[in-house]
Structures are given as C-alpha cells and as structure tokens.
Image (tube, rainbow, N blue to C red; front, side):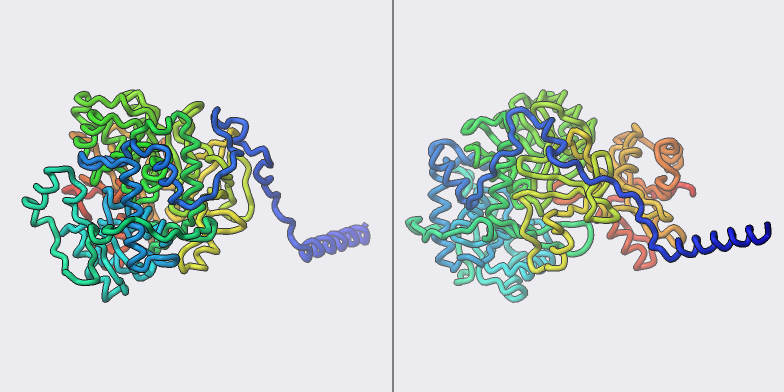
Length: 610
C-alpha cells in the first residue's frame, strides 16, 4: 500500500513538473470580426451602394465640374455679396496664375490663415491648381502656435485678411519660420457696395497697416492677370493636397498628409450618403470654419460638388445665424452638438422660420440623444450624427438620412469604408460585433501619414488600418457606437473609467446643463475621477447631492471623487467642450504646487466627500 501510494505520488509530481516546463496554454481568443459580408451590408440605406467605385481625381476637378455644369448658378454668398460659379472659376484661375508667379508649384506649402470668406475658397482651389499644398491654420491661434506650425510644415507663403486681428500675428514668421511672402486680402473687396466703402472709411481701426515691400502682395495685384496658368499634372494618389494639423488631447499637433485622392474620395463618399440632395438646387449654410477638416470637406467641397450655393458665415452668432436661416432658406446645415443645443435653448426661437432645413449633420463631438430629439421636433429636419477625424479627411461613418437612425450611434461606414474593432490589449486582433475595442478605419479617405513623423505614422497606420484612438463597438447591424478616447481613459486603482460614461450619468440630473470628466493624479489610486459641472440657469446643486444622485448609476470606481462647479466650461474653436484645457489646468496645479485660478470658475468650488 505504501509503495503504491509513493509510486502514485511520484507519478503525480512528475506530471506536475512536466506541466510547469510546458509553455502555458494561450487563453481562448475571441473569434475575428465577421467575414464578408460585413455586418452593415445587410442593413445599408436604400439608394446607397457600399460597393460603389470611389473615383480618384485631383481636388480642383470638383470646382471645374461645377463651373462647367452650373456656370450661372450662385456659388458663394458672403455678407450679401454673391459669386456665380463662372465668376468663382475665373477668380480661382487668375489667383492660380498669381501663385505660380510667386513660385508655387509641387512641394510648395501655402498657409491659409483665414476665417470663412470668399478668399478661403478662392485661394484653396488656386493653390491646388498651381500645384501647391494647402496648410490650414486656425486664425484664433496665438503667435507661438502659428510659428510652430509654420516651421513644422515649412510654409513658404501665407494668405490672410488685412485685419488687425489676423495680419500682425504673421509678421514674425519672416524671421522665426522662414516665411517668404504674405498675401494680404482686403475685407472691403469682398463686401457688396456700399458696405465695402463704408468698411474702408469707418473701420480703420480694424484694418492692419501693411508695409509696401516685395514680401507683401495685395490680393488685387496677385490676380492682375489673364488667368491662363500653367496646368499641373497631378498624381492624386501621391500628390499632397492638404496638411491638416490635428489638435489631439496630448502631445504636439501633427500634420495629417491628405492626398488629392483622400480629399476627393471623401467628398464623393459624403455626397453619396446625401441621397436627398438635389444637384444644382441646394443651399448650404457655412457656419463651420472651412480651415477645420469638417467644414473643408462637408461644407465647401461637398457643397461645390453638388453645385450648391454656400452661405459663408465668418463667425458664429446665434441670432444672426437664425436670421440667415429665416431669410435665406438654406437646406443643408452642418454643425457641432453645441450649436444644435444652443438652437434648442434659444429663448426667441419661435420668431424664426427654420422649415427650409431638410438635412442636418452633427459631428466633432457626441450628440446627446435629447438634443437630437428636441431639434428634430422643433424644426422637422432630420439630424444625423456622423464621425470622422483629420486623419480620414474626415468622414468615416454617418447615420442614414433615410432608414433607421439609431440614437447614440455614430452611424454606419460610408461607401468604400471598412470599420473594424481592434482589441485594446492586442491591436492586431479584431473583435466581433458587440465587443468594445479601438475603432479602426480602412478606406480611400485615410491619410498617407503624418508630416515628418515616421514613428507616429507607424503607430497610427498598422496593417492598412487607421487606429483612431477611439473606443467603441459595432452592433450586429453594422452601426458603430463611440464610447471614449483611449487617451482619455482614467486609470483608477487598476480600473478603466470612461469619462463619457460618467458624463452621461451626470447629465441625467435635471439641474445639470453639461459636464466634463477627466482624471487627476492621486498618490494611492494613480488617478481619481474629477467632474467639472455647469448648471442650468437658476438651478442649485451641491457636490454631495450630485454624488447621492450618481450612486445607483455608476460603479464605485467610476464615482467622481472631486466635483467642481463652473459658470462656463472651456471649449475648442469649433465649440466642443475641451477636456484638454481642463487637464492642462490640473497639470499646472500639480506642477506649481498651488491652486490654479481656472477660467470662469464659480464663486465656490466644492469637492465631494470620499
């Protein structure tokens, strides 16, 4: 008995030792994403062919086609002045010849430092016709930000308005960034008579003084020619149309290289989605800045592709925008959720007729379900949410205008685009519908890479996929749902906290107007959850009351440990709530070791009890 027992014990020990020496078994992997057909193919909207061939062409073909097809139709309307497609085409050709006279050709980068105006559209297409590359600049940037982007992009020529608010920001670039010339565009020349004359006479303080030298070229001198420029042979797949600088939540901005093929393809993809659009009959309201990729493609390029009249609005003011809708009757409107929420809350909305709007798209930030529902009820217009990023020119997904429009979803892939969900632990492993992971994009609109950033390019473009840095999932019908940014994840004592999920719970409180959640350093937990909250007018709420409200809506590790009430929350230049600014404040707070006076802070800051 004893011998047998010892023998069995020895055999068991030998087997155990063998198992220890053997490589551990790999955990069972999730099956890959469903093979073709893709989930969205069975539920694709009527009238749209996901398999449709996406044309490849130089971007200026968009304008040339429209000029040929609708020469007498209004193309642009700005502050009461209108340009037909024929007039716009002639101005672009003359500007292209002027740019070539300044040395613009393939490889030359021209910066557009312009708000929405005819100058932007004219110079954008003229630079591309001359063979150059457009570098978009935000006119609200500070001089330091402008200089950094100019150096990084090797911008040789800048175009700006002759305004005190814009031109002086560029003068230091001659020495700091190797700038060669500035094209100066007088505001008075794009205003109708007599407003142009009035502006010149009575707005002198707003007009910048410009030196009379060879480095400064007035726009009227630039276009003083016959418009017969030297045609440039463009390879759409290789030649760069636009350097679009991203404004990510961390790190320095990077220039997304968008080829002619990228930009043209995304214009065609977005137009295909607009099944209700009537070529030569639509009116676009251009409130989104054209220097932003959403406005550049969705408003300008798609509008021109459709032969639409584009009403250019230089800056957003709610009452003025509503008056434009009431009087000019636009049919298509693109905006960010903040704009739609502001329309819903406007106290005198019933004074304006918004019934001309038929297709509206929201992008740039998650669209709250209640904002969508309220806007559609007030206007009778279909409001769909889309998704994109600078690296994809930008549109990747949109909810259907006709068919099922799922609230909370960012829609289905536009034609020719594949959306895949990659594992957060293994980026090369794809997940099936219903599983959360990183949203990845394949399609003709995906950038060629980042300008002079090979390592960033290699990280972002893997195996033919654009890794977006966004967390989401796809349902069985192919609709994509966005959860959060990977870079925004809060690591609280080893748990992943998605800020958007916490924000959605906070926003359920009837006293809360909006909120932003981010992680702040903590010695024991790594990071804790902090919420910045703006209350609705006339409402009161304490941190303790809000925490009690959230107890059954969030897991313990998701609960905000700090709550700060503010009169206003910081926003980006297109109106998105800016988590980046709040994180920067917290970093300064930690680095300086003292409290930071945040912008627009309420009289008292409250912290929830632990």
